[in-house]
Length: 508
Image (tube, rainbow, N blue to C red; front, side, top):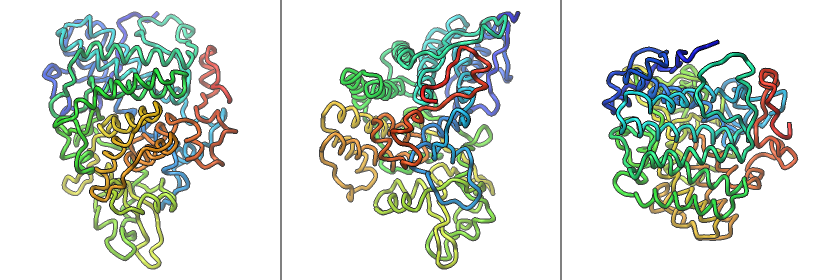
């Protein structure tokens, strides 16, 4: 039998020391990747190592968060690219999914993250960490756990719910756990959000510097998102839409110098402008020498090809002259129709900052693909450093979520939509006027398409809007009402073999 003196695996490799230095209590973080429970309960530094490790593990899952929210959408389907296709991305955007062709085994690895967060929640109140710090950090952990379970609910429907730490394991059967119903998972998500808000109290302040710690505003943003989903898909209706609107209104009431849309879209993501960035609510941190963003390597280009590609329908400027140190592959792209649609209005400042079209550097200058530039980072000497933070929630989310809440309540969302458009287009912004529910939702989804390229939001926005909007956006050969099961992902046969309490996702 294993005793309760087991070690916590905390995943501190390359942890964000810049972010951690914002918190004085983390100055004595123990530099190791395993700590015993007894040490975590008696040594404040060890407890803080466990807490910091939860953020490091959350960061290690960014690629999965991105894929689940981005690659099943219409943005990258049937794209043009210069190298061999990325098989995982292609499987997701073509919805080539079945019980025998499962994109993510083992629940995408999320339970390792939940396991560590459960341990932090268990240990913190019993540890020597001072009460004020402990309460705030517990509030953060409940918020993070709610976000993870919400992602899992949207991905698989019902999933096993585990909120207690593992203390002893006598045999394999003790690890078996059936899937909870979607309603039960949603109840747990909502409970964690309320617990997070309760523990944060009335403080809506952000930590000084980079906004890379979960906070009360993030919990309110998640609440708005979650209640829109449950109102749409779990029978909550107008009551849930009203709850979402109330949470989002509280955030919007904070709009001011510390929380607002950046006037310049590029400044939202600029790695040199992270500190106290007023649009960011919560982001995952990346820094030179600690951990850098590796999620988007397949959206770049290798340096050999870069010399023969151009960013204009001309011989120059070549890609290599503009980005001499960028390296990667080009295995995922946009279709010509998507490129044409997104670039048709030159006034939209979001598009040229999000990606650049690459052409052959010789006549007839055919389109060869796109390079994703939103997270291109900075240079250090002769090295490209992918040190952009990855936003989870920003103020633009609040405006579009509020627009959705108003639309679903039969109200006018034009104010929120027009704020997004005004930032994007400036004086040339097309003014939106209130229309039918479908008119309003389509306008909101159009802004999601343009605003959040590569931020893992588009698929979730389509799903949250409602199934008819999903089918309208996704190619019918890939997803249609006749393949409704594919809105959720299956689990693998090996998962069911390893846990006889598990059953397959309905429809597979």
